[in-house]
Amino acid sequence: MKKVIKLVIASLLISIIGVIALNTTTFLIPKGEGTAALSTENSVSGNSARLFAPLITAFPPSNEGTIRIEFPNGMTLAELQNISWTQFVAQGYAAHVDVLLDTLGDGTVNDSLVFEYAKVKPLDCDDTADYPVGPINTFGDKGIVDENAYAWLNSNVPGPCGDSNFDSNHKSLANWKLFYPNAKIIALEIEVDGWISQSEAFIDNVMVNGELIQNFDGVQTGNGQVVTDLTLIINPISLIFGDMQPGESKTLPTILTVGQSNLDVSMIQVTPSQEGGIFNENNVLFSVDDINFADVSEIGIINIPSETSKNLFVKLTIPTATPAGPFSGTITYTVMQA
Amino acid sequence: MKKILSLFLVMSLLAGIGLVVAETNNQGAEGNVVANFNIIFNPQILNFDNLAPGESDSLANTIIGTTSNLEITLIQVAPNIGTIFNENNVMFSNDDVAFVSAASFVAAPISIPAQGEFDFFVQMNIPVGTLSGPYAGTITYTVMEDVV
Image (cartoon, rainbow over all chains, first blue to last red):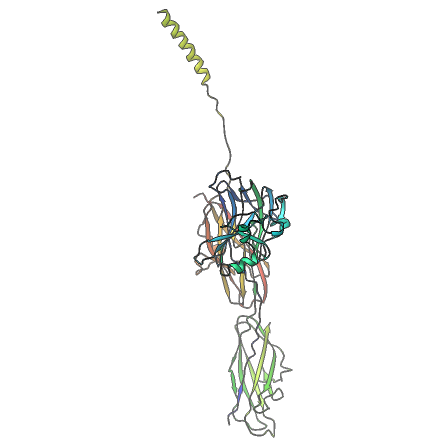
């Protein structure tokens, strides 16, 4: 009768909840008589981007200073949660953001959502009485671009609030997502323009979905997370003890090989199957030198450096008076980073 | 004859007055053009994947120039958190295939034309046996004016 012991390793699965980082490319683009350039003025730290646009007196061209942010890996409107930036409004009308959309799936800009100071809060719409100046976060008392912020559609009329045509295309970001469920974002353009007045703003700390995209400081950082390689290869995967009589012992060699991390075998468990019950922690002993055997409670931690192997000897003793019959069981090795 | 002489005298006077009026006055001008060393990093923060020891991850990189022609002459990599974000483990490539150290990467001229861009790849390699945990660091690019 052949007695087969099946060995399995319990896989330790580590679930790491990571933040999906955005991949962006930032450009400074002047249009018409506008300016977009790095500056050391009015920055939160280091540099800012100075956006300047003289009053548009003859169109075209449109005078604009623009920060254009593209997403090389793509981004959908559905994925957009929020946009914010710090700005120092030096003169004129605060910077706004245009979300350039591909609504037709043709890879081009088909329309844009305009989030601007005077239109993001429908209950305080066309608030021209106190245009902010100086340092503010995004739209100051009107908040940032988030699910509740309202945008108007660039292809439609630009206002005023209350105009039925305008209102029909003036929705919150959450509702625009429902309206354009498959839209892709081609780019974000944070800009000042000269439609209302000559305007100038210094932009810093641009954030999308809570992640810092650009602070114009000329410093690049990298970061990440090292996770443990818990690979443990067991040879042989099945220990075949063969026929044994009561009172007899047999030792079989096992080779434990680890992957790229230093590992400790911190615990060994021996579990008998329903097929016979003798393959248990009383009858199965372990040794690293084939001389000194110990049970699972005494074997201690077995350290295995990365990309190396360690011999382990498994000795099974059949208790006297054990009835004849098959037996099987499982040895479970628990590993952790050394 | 008398009229002719008078006319000649008047013309001579006018000519003399004209010379005085046409006297030139020069205005000097001088200044100094200084290079604009500003560049914009894209991405500003390189967020690498979660990596096990022995694994690597590369990210596309674009440096946008501003108003001067610039050349990258030095790239330095320094760890901030942990020790592995260093010049042995952070490598650079033009094609996302062949990666070299920062020193080797700048051995060939790297130009950033004014209002142009330079595209490349940055790779993070996790050495075998590295302990799990976060790491971070800074890449510093030294630029000078490209006068070629």
